[in-house]
Image 1: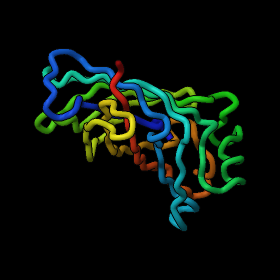
Image 2 (image 1 turned 90 degrees about the vertical axis):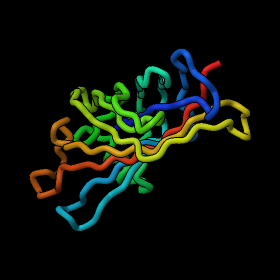
Image 3 (image 1 turned 180 degrees about the vertical axis):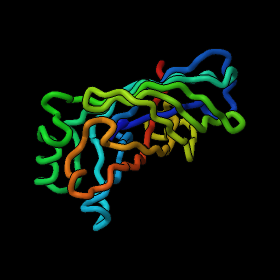
Length: 191
């Protein structure tokens, strides 16, 4: 859901010295924030993703700083189930008519060596903004063999309570409010 559904940090390809911030554009064809949420108090886990994401990443490798600015089109929610997709967009769930986007804006706050490992930011969903920490579990930069452009990719995870954002559908029926985020992201260095 999120980011949001969500976002991350990038370095330029190995061996390239950086003396200034490098900016990247999210590749919408290779970035899919996904999530897992409880169904009926532990009966099963529903998984979904958002298929439209845009944004930018800035990374200054020398200074070990960076920022993330991501927008997710909530109307692009996809559970792989047409009826569930329709219901998820309705007013009693994501209410996409009123809240057609979710955003994540954060700062890269930790590195392991020269690789970003943590982003701390603000996640906005359904008009509510709360802090959200993302852990970067894997990260790689390389020249994309297809486009020949410097490209970075990462997989990140995070967790939030959907009730904190007013996404209360079926919580009164015993559904658990915790949502696990799994975000795959690729971004291309701006020219």
